[in-house]
Amino acid sequence: MRRILVTGGAGFIGANFVRMVLSEQPDTLVVNLDKLTYAGNLENLAGFTDHPNYVFVRGDILDAKLVEKLVTDHQIDAIVNFAAESHVDRSLVDPGIFIETNVNGTLTLLKIALGKKLERFIQISTDEVYGSLGDTGKFTEETPISPNSPYSASKAAADHLVRAFGHSWGLRYNITRCSNNYGEYQFPEKMIPLMINNALGDKALPVYGDGLYVRDWLYVYDHCTAIWKVLTEAAPGEIFNIGGNNEKTNLEVVGLILSRLQKRTALIRHVTDRPGHDRRYAIDSSKIMRQLGWKPSVTFEIGINKTIDWYLTNETWLRHVVSGQYQQYYESMYDNR
Ligand code: NAD
Ligand code: TYD
Image (spheres, rainbow, N blue to C red):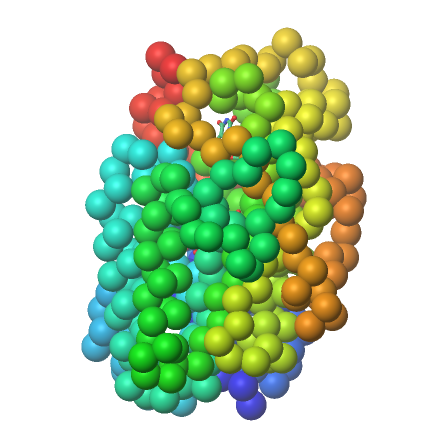
């Protein structure tokens, strides 16, 4: 039996990964360690709580004693590290927690993975470590690291640490760098669920600047299948870019959401831009496609329809996540913008 410690498994991508593994990989034990910050939500794992191959532990990746105990007690052979502060806008307001969780938290896990001689450490990173592109070209695994936001700087620092543990002491690791994800269970601070939620409530859709920023969108399930392939098939020490080959401007995405929900484009409001906003991301995924035979299962058009349908049929989930704290977050970020 494969025995993995997933960190941050109550967040958006982590929860989708846990759901996929428990549904499709019967011979795998999943221990999910999550601090349940504002972004962690046990409702993302509804239906899996009592699964015989699943253990949930509320806790912090910075708590070395706890992590060590989990690794020992459950005879863990790999860590998949999703736990992070993940939102660029928040990192521009309060970068400190990004260093704590994303850098020091990863360091804590790395020391334990090395000390316990784990089979593998998988660091879930992001294409944002490469910085921003002009009108042409794509990020490859050889593109120099050049992060522009406190979020991406903290993720890049973690990537460097992972690599250094491999280089210095032989830690068996992989790093995955994926483009923007969308899909079920995404917290509505990120663009796609935020726009869906606002459109459903006939609220203004806040498009930063001219709205011509480009992201390369990948359906979250396809990110999860790529991570599984890396965990189970990749040689140690390899870094993999993961992307959907789906470049869209923000205005194109917002237009699609509005038309699908039969809402007026007059809801679009251009608001003050994000400082240092990366203009364009685009990923060259040819390495993972060639070496591991991975490919996305859906086009953007299918994935976005599935996602919108999910938000429509999971109104209770959405209502819970946009109550309380979220309202204050929204006001502080968008009022007077
Ligand atoms: P998310 O913000 O939805 O979830 C993060 C999870 O980590 C939450 O459940 C939170 O409670 C948990 N967490 C935070 N601090 C913790 C700590 N100290 N100890 C334990 N748990 C903690 O994030 P996401 O969008 O699911 O992203 C997951 C990972 O994927 C991140 O590392 C992110 O950098 C990376 N990534 C995200 C995207 C994207 O489009 N969302 C794209 C590429 C890479
Ligand atoms: P986001 O989902 O925050 O992901 P990232 O910044 O990590 O790429 O944002 C995606 C794009 O959408 C990005 O160009 C910023 C833009 N955006 C808006 O225009 N309005 C918004 O309210 C948000 C949250 C994002």
